[in-house]
Image 1 (cartoon, rainbow, N blue to C red):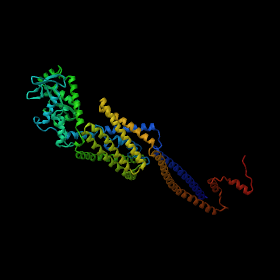
Image 2 (image 1 turned 45 degrees about the horizontal axis):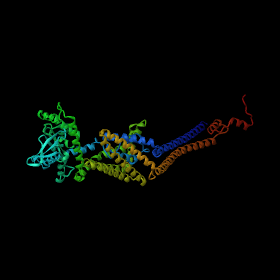
Image 3 (image 1 turned 30 degrees about the vertical axis):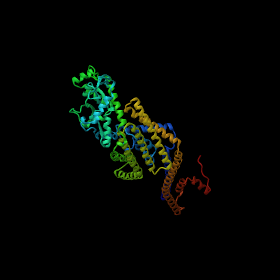
Image 4 (image 1 turned 60 degrees about the vertical axis):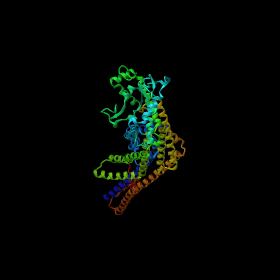
Length: 636
């Protein structure tokens, strides 16, 4: 009887295990269903968002944060932005993997990256190289320089006014262009058409000895260099000034020593030609260089300049003199920017070579950017998964690490084609950008505007090619992306023209104009992108919405069915095992009942166990009395 009770107890236990297994499978299936729905929601979150205002505000804030970091921390060569990395690091999972570098967001980011900040390493390198490649324009002795001799004579003669003849000589007046005073003058005895003045002299606004040219980026032919020499000895670079002031000013130089602007004479012991930036100095710097020379002149020259109206009683340059000189300098710089720097003067072979070197040098950063963007997020994700697991021994840790590394490697391999497209596209982008930046730095102002437009258009074509190379997008999606690139590029060109005009009209400094232009560009670009999404010229938005949702549902349904089958198979195996045990238990019960001696053995206890096990609800004592014909005694 004890054996019978043990078998019945084992069968009850097996049935309970079977019920538990069924419940556990049901719960797991429910979790699988909820996970599938969550993955569908995450993958469709962009497609299901139609709030124009919220999307615009979100995109603007993201782009602004990314561009501030890119521009002011000089991260342009990585071709990724801080907001993209933050999103990837914080939200990455293998089921939630938005690839910003191959999406519409990259269209906006690439447009912002058409230009670098003036303080960026790339722009500073171009400026530094241009300064380093400067060579002396005038190499002959001044007394033998026909450009210098003829230039001064022609300018002096052109400034004579109120001409009259007396006793066979010509007389007239000539005006000091800085003080405004007029002086009597006459022609030379040996040449009645050649004028001279003791008080005034024709002077180069930009000193002759300070004029240079870029020997690497400008062709060194006599034809081109003579054109430059003629300009610096033309009326545009000449002014009439007091003889003592001209002598005191001398070759006033502007130097940049360890980042600090200093004004000095080339005869000074502290002068270093390598620090001389006079040829590319601003109007304010050139004026201050002359003022420094005048206010530090010797006693005799200083007294003459006081009498001539240049200095006040305290030996300081008068306000009107300084203003007139600045006006002369600004007119000269404007004339130079309009006259010098033809495209045909440039040495394109050297420009191409240096642009290629810059692009090659940036490849390391470009590859590093791709590594950070595609490799680090899954590594961080895997590390988080391992850390969250409890009871992690060294052996388990190494085992998990090996599995994680395989998943990361598989993910990177899957993204390798995108990585290569980005590396090639960004390298070409960098080459084009540097190539045009060098040319823009060398050419005259009127051509600069045109070249900036051409630069933006060429860079947009590079981005279009990168879009076309993406094998994961349809023809309609590529057409949509290209349309957005062209519209946003045109927007950038228009804003460039507008802000250049505003800068000239209001003379605002770069520290204000650059961030202001950046903010307006980001706002307008995002607005254009969202409007184009709304218009949906190529039926991409609706087609993408319906097709992608259907695709995602099909993928998740297939995954759910597969996992369910696997789960049910595992549950079936467990249930089958339990059913076999129950069958064995029943068999054992039947066998034991066959061996039961009805005359000797009491089966009531065993029957009660079976009755309870299967919830049969039988009162065996009542049944026995009914069977034996006796009435059941009922207690009061």
